[in-house]
Length: 437
Image (cartoon, rainbow, N blue to C red; front, side, top):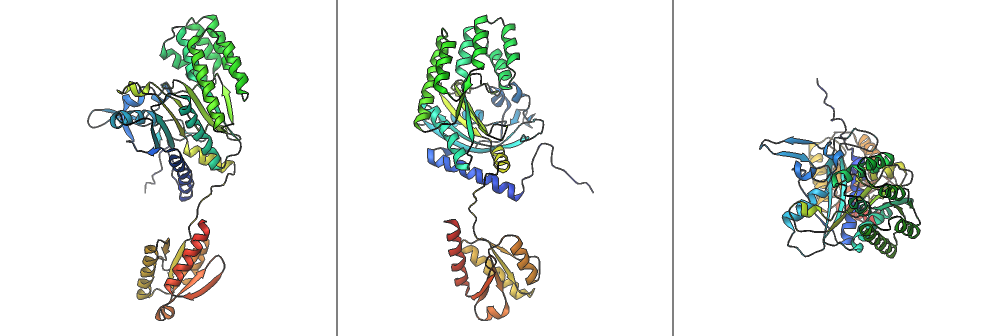
C-alpha cells in the first residue's frame, strides 16, 4: 500500500498549531479594528506578469508559476502587495482616501526548506493607500510596534531605513533602476563589499562609492545624531536630502506615538523592488530572523494601471511569529471556553438517543459539547474526558433520566451533582463566564 507524504517544504498544521496561528491572527484582526483597516481577500492565483513586475529577482525565480488550461501564465502569490495594488485599481479607485485595507493570506515561494522558512506561509497585512505624508508611514510602523506589544514581546526592535535616499544618490549617477535593484539585493543579503564592487564596475564616481560606503556603516539607536551625520555625508545630493528630511519627520511622528525601539540603519535595503521610501523590518531579541517588514511603495499602483497613488504597508509573518513566541516562551493567551463531554452510562440505544438529544440542547444554548461516540464504558469515557481537558461531563443514566435529571460531573474539582438539565446548563454557563472574564 502506498503511503503518501506531504510535499517537501509544506506543513501539516496539528490542532495545537492551528490554535496558536489563529491566536496571532486574532491579534492582527484586533489591530484592524483599532486602526480602522477593512479586511479584504484576493485570489491565491494571479497573473504571473502582475506578481513578477516588481517582486525582485530572487522572488521571480522562486514563484510557483505555470500555464493554465486557458493558456495564461499564472502563479501562486509569493506575497500580497502586488495583489493589493491590483485590487485597488480594479475595485477602489473612486473611493475617498485614505483607504485602509487589511488581509490575512497564505503565500507560496519555492524556497529551499530550512529553519523558519516554508514553501507555504501565512502573512498578515496592513496597507494605507492615498497618503504620502510622514504620519501615514508612522501609523504603519506604530501598528508593527503595537502588534509586538500585544503579543507579549518585551525585547524587540524595528530596523528602519529609507530606500529613497539610496535611490536618489544612485540616480544622480544615472545608474539604471535595474542595476540599483541588483545593488540593493546584495545589500539586503549583507553583501556590502560586492555591492560596492558592482558600483565601481558601473563607473560610479568615487564620491558616490564613498557616500554609499559611509551610509552603509551608519546605524544605531541614537536617531537624532545619526540623522545629522547622514546629512553631512549626503551634502550636495539635493534629492537625497529631501528624503532624509522625510525620514526625520517620520521619526518625529514615531516619537509622538511612543514607538521607541527603533534602530536606524542607512545601509538597510530590502529585496522587493517596489519600495520608494521608508522601509523597515521587525526583530525579536533571541530570534535571528525578521518577524515582518514593510515600507512605502508610491509607484506600484500606477504601474498596474491606476493613477499615481502613494501607499505604505506592513506584513507580519504569522508562522515566524508563532515560532518565535514558542522558542522565547512567550505565552499564547488563549481564551479557553468550557468544554463539556456527554456520555451515556451504557450502550442502550434509547439512552444513547437521550445523550444525543442533550448534546444538541447544550449546543442550542451556545455551549461547546462533544458526545461519546466510541462505545466506551463510563469509567473509560470519564478518563478520556479528563485527559482531554474537559471541564464537565454530563452523565446520562436511566435512573436519573426517569427523574428528569442528569449527573453533572465537575472534572476539575472532582465533584458531581444530580441536577436538571436547565440547572446543568446554568452551572456550565456561569463557569464559562468566570473563565472568560
